[in-house]
Length: 357
Image 1 (cartoon, rainbow, N blue to C red):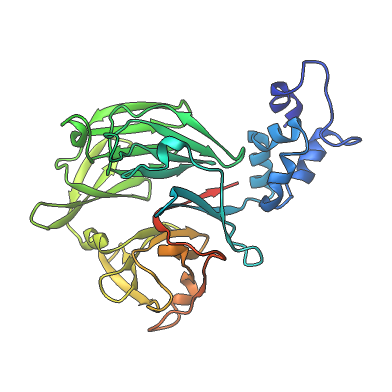
Image 2: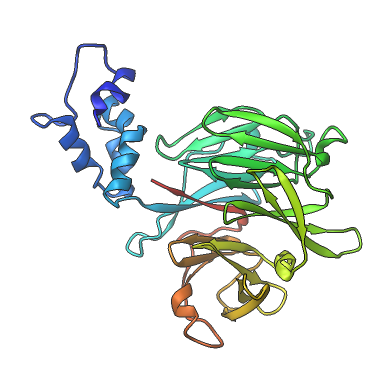
């Protein structure tokens, strides 16, 4: 792959090729630079315009993936009582594990409530929302983790706040919520990241009381709760754009946050002593794995997964790390590691996502 004919064109005039590293072919330089740990990428971006373009290029990501050098970091959106919405990032490497504030989010989003936050590829998307001064909005902002900057993305077809969303196969799916029009809960909007465009559909769900979307095995599991408190579930197949109701206990995922680890769904049951449950697809039931210490968790919590580890992130950015393989070997109270931010905070966690570079 010849990097000099791609990202270089954005910052150098044609015919004035400058090597990434003096005395080395660009192909060799990329192989060397791709091995630099992610925590130093912000330094690499400052070396030159060409290096900055490299870190934003597909060649860079291709070589990091090919050489098994990719690193996954956790991005958390929080609400601080005085500062509004803030975004933090966590490098999970135990030697460098600490929460750090990233680039300030766009000012229109700093005071919004009811936003949805999703990750696609190397970007984090802030969708919709509202405030006491502003009705539901269709605005979308994205943070490019490679370039460490925010930008504006294509607006949603329907203005919404307090809606559900999920990412699946380089697409975002959103539905339900409140909007300026009464048709908002009945529409089903899909974002295509490759073209930065939206397509709006009539809601394929037979009922519109969806409260959660879970991407699972190439499909979307929809969790519903009726007006009388009854929970049920369905499966949406993007390939055929059809929805079908299912009759099993997966709908009980309303009891806590969920995360998928290697195709298996886990839930933290916050209503019964902070228990970690695993969904058994063959038996169509939840199975208890173990309990978390109430002294280490600050619910309500959010879950994300990196490899075979589940990160339980609670209020004030309290964080537990659970190895699901080790957890399955021990009954009762699960063994986990925990840490807190190195600064005082009163933050309420809004969302958690991961981005791999």
